Length: 501
Image (tube, rainbow, N blue to C red; front, side, top):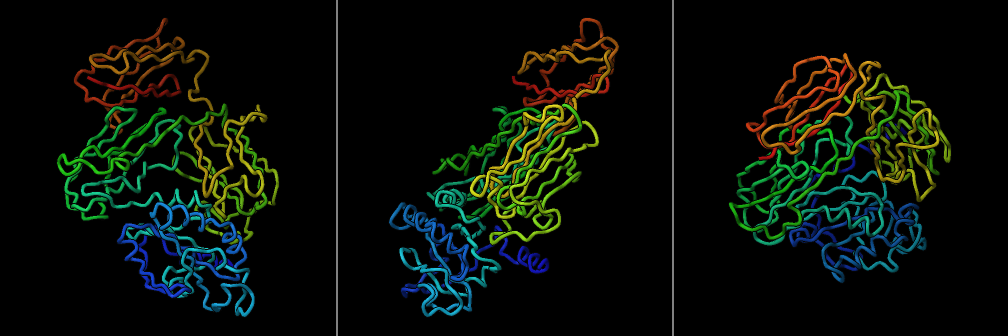
């Protein structure tokens, strides 16, 4: 069983692969050529199933594909095409219409009420390397394909909308954007490596583009790209590493293409990543409560430190950290599997004060809530088990949350940290730093830019009665975001400010 599962996970056509072309007749005798459809600018959604497959029948009966086809097919806004493929070689044509005359098994009449094309074609299933049913693929006009879960019509359309679709003469877009982190919550200083695929969606070649990266509306980097991209060609763009510590918005914008030529569709020229501050627990002991849904064996979780090292894990190890959505026909019960509708309590004994993250994956890809039971996960301060600081459960494949554990500054009674004030902010000529701390605490600091480069050092000194002050000239500094890291006693505090002329 384990060998079969491993084969299933490795054999399925990988996301981002070029879709295999096919020319096939549907059961009504009409011929369909996949690449001709894609070349016409249409998105294609394919479900590959088997008539004997009970979950396939349940999904078919939900009319998700039919509703998608009605809204976005030829009779709707005409943006996509839908195909249903019978991929099992051991069934005959009669199986599509129900059990009568069927060899191989049939759960019902797949033809009745279906207006999109049905293909009885094992070769297509083999070309897409199908190893389980149902397998649903979205194929973009650039011929890239990616697999999706059995979603409703709205969910399928949201996935399909991620496809780059050519429009107009001059048109560039941001796709496959990756901020460089799985976490949208910041604990301490988070290092990011933003990148994306610059894609030509115009009929004319894309030869130049100006690209801007902003943090909270302050430009941190501008890139000038030049090259030659035909329609649907891509160039991968990498920004310099960014160091973030406070909540804000990381905004990527294509500001100019082809040396000033207007973009025919600006809607895909902007991408925002919203970052919030992580929750802070009051000690290195954190209480975790998990309630499983009707399929407890689908849950797996890990706690990691800020270097990605796994410190503790629980749940079905067959699902694992990368197993979200990998078992559409049911998850095999493996080591660590939880019972259904169970309540699990675990005290996380973290090694020290610092930044951590918790990662949940679901084997089926429907989270822990709410279609099949109201499961959840919650994290509490150990001394307050009634009020969670972090709650989750309603997700698809994964849920990932950052958090801090223990006080940020471990100092003695004589080294209590007071307010840290930075003004003016933004600064133009001078930056004033004022710190109040208990008498006798040693204070030192460093200032970094968003590339993590040291901009200025503050020499160590003892805290004075009434507070310490610094008056830094910044008129010669480049505009942008900076991070002040002050070490006060044995604790460290980070503050963000900007320089603007």
